[in-house]
Length: 449
Image 1: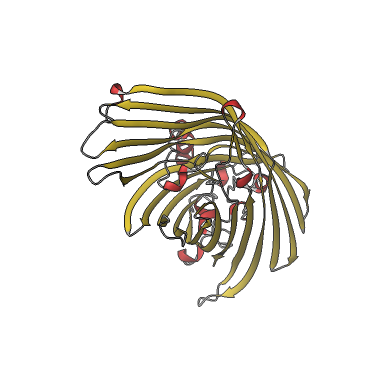
Image 2: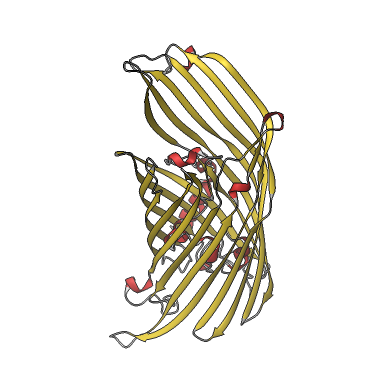
C-alpha cells in the first residue's frame, strides 16, 4: 500500500502543474504579485524558517545545499496544500476573502554518497484579488471601480548539492538551484457610473520567461554528544528577467460581456525586470535529552531551535518598459526575521521498534516571524507579524521516512496611518512527504550469496 501511494504521488505531477494560481491579498497588486512565497508547511510552522531547517527525512527546496543530506537510499516526494482566510479593514469598512491551492511538488534524492538532486515546481509570485471602491463625482453621480488581479509565475527548477566535507563531527555542503520562470500576472480595473453597465476596462500585464538561480551553503558541526549546531547561508545574485509588458484599454456598453469591448488602446512590448537579488543567513541548534518514562523505558528526545534572517532589496527592482522607461514597483525593501522551536519526545522510535506512546513520536512545532514589507502608505512602511503552530505525524508503515504535516498560521499586515488597508489572516497548511520503505530504498547495493 505504501509503495502504491508513493507511485501515485509521482503520477500526480502533470495534473498539479496548473494549481499554483491563488493569492487573495490586494497587496499582490504591487510589482508582479506576492514574491518569496515558496515555503511549505514545515518551514511555515517554524515561523517561516525557510532555508534554516534541515533534516534527513525532510525536503527543503528553499535550501539547495540540503539535498545531499537526505537519508541515503530514500528519495523524498513533497506536496503541499495551502488555505488562507483573510479579513481586510479600511476606514471602518471590512471585507473577507478565502482561498485554497496546491503550492508545490518536489522530488529529491541523494546519490553517490556526497551528492543530492532535486526536481520540481514551486510558486514564484501570485496574484488573485478582488475589491470594490466608489468615488462621488457630483451630488447625483458616483463612479464605481472594480479591481481584480489574477495569474501567477511558477518556477520549474532543478537543484544539485554536494558535501565538500563529510566527517563525523563536521559536514559542509554547497548547492545551487536553477529554474525557468514562466507565467503571467494581470491587474484589471473596471470603471462604471452607478446605475449603468457601460464603462471602461483596463488590463496591465507582465509575462515572464526567464532563468532564475540561487546558491546556498550549510555547515554543521558536533559540539558535544548532546549538542549539534548548523549554520546556513543563502544568496541570489542580481538577475535580468525577460518580460513582455501589456497595456490594454477598452470601452464597452456592458462591461460584463467581453464580446462587446471596443479597443481604445492595446500595446505589448518586450522589456525586462532587473532583480536586485537577495541574501540570508540562519542557524539551527539540536539538543538531545535522555529521559525515563513511567515504564522505565529510556527515550532520546530532541529539541531544535531554528532562526533565520533574509533581506530582499526590492526597492532597487527596476521594470524596463516601453521606450527605455523605468518603473520601480516597490517603495521599500523586504526584511524577514523568524524563530522557531521543534520538539520530538522520542527521536529514536524506529530504534525502539515502534514500541511506546504514539504521541511521543510526533514532532511539535511553534514559531514567530516579523517582516517589513516592500510597500508603504502615506510614507509609513507596512509590517507583518505572525505566530505559527504545527505538528508532524510520521507514517510508520514498513520503516519509511514518510510523514504528514499540519500547520496553522495567525498573522496580520498593518499600517497605522489613517485610511490604510489592514489585513488579519488565518492560514491552514497541509503537506505530505512520501518516501519508499526500507525494502524499496534506491541505490542500495544488494549482495547475492
